[in-house]
Length: 358
Image (cartoon, rainbow, N blue to C red; front, side):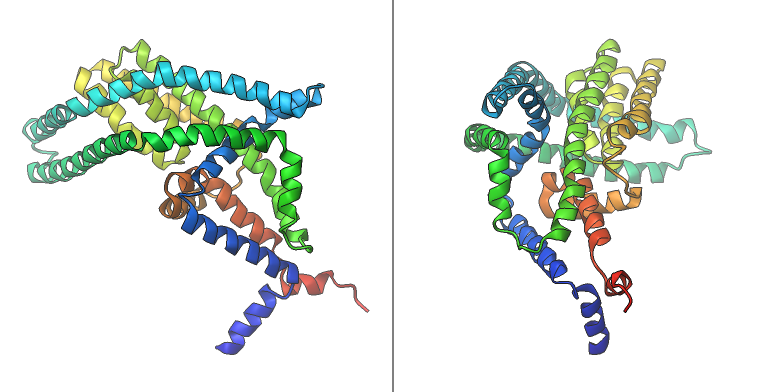
C-alpha cells in the first residue's frame, strides 16, 4: 500500500514546479473557503474589472491615459447602473412583492386544476398519484415562497452592507483598471521563482475568464431583454420580474433554464388558463431557450468553454455548494481551471519522454 502511494507521489510531484503550483492553488482554495464572505467585495470588483477592461484598453490604445480612460468607462457604467437602480429595480421589486402576495392564490388555482384532471381523464390519470404530487409540490413551493420572503427581509436588513460595497467596490475597480500592470507585478513578487506551469495555466485561463464574464453579461442582457419584449407584447403579468429571472437563469447552465420555467408557466396558467394564449407563451419561451442554447451560447463562448455537459453540471453542484452564488457564477471557469491544471501537470512518464536519450 505504501509503495503504491510512494509511486503515485513520485509520479505526480517529481517536478518542483508542480509542487509550487499545487501549493499556490491550495492556499487560494483555503483563503476562498474560509474567508469568502470577507473577500466578496474583492470578487465583485474583479468581475467588474474583467468586464470593463476591454473598453478601458481600447481607449488607452487610442491615445487616452489609462487613468482617464478608466474614469470615463466607470462614469458611463455607473450612469447605466444608476438608471437600472432607479428605474428598473423598483418595477421588478414591486412586481416581486405582488407576486408573493398572489402566490398562495396561484397555488390553490393550480391545485384545483390538477385535481380536476382525474375526473376528466380517469382512464389515464390516477387521482391518488395526482394528490401525492400536488401535496409534495405545494410543500416545496410554499417553502420557496417563505425563503424568498426571508431573503427580501434580510436584504433590507443588510442595506448598510450594500452601502459599504457601493463605496469600496468602485474604488477597487478603479485601481484595478488604472494600475493594472503595477498590481500584476506586485502579485508576481509573491509567487515562486519557478512558475512556468503557473504561467502556462494563467495564459490559458486569463483569456477564457475574460471571454466568459463578458459573454455572460451579454447573454444576460440579450436573453432578459428579448424575454421582456416577448412577455410585454403578450401582456403577461409580472413581465419585468420574469424577464429578469429568465436573464439571470443563464448563470446556472441547464438547471437555471429548467428552474425558471416553473414561475413563467405558473403565471401564464394563472392569467390565461389552458388556452391558446398560454400555448403561445410556452412556445415563445421555448424558442428563446432554443436560440440561447444553440445560437447565442456557441457564438459567445466558442473559445471559452470546451467541457462535457456532465462536467459542467458537476461543477455547478460542487462549487455552488462550496461558495453559493459566486461558486455557481464561476463554476465553468473553475472547471476549466481544473482541466487546464490537469493538462499542464507534469508526469514522470512525460518527463522521461522529454529527456534526450544519451
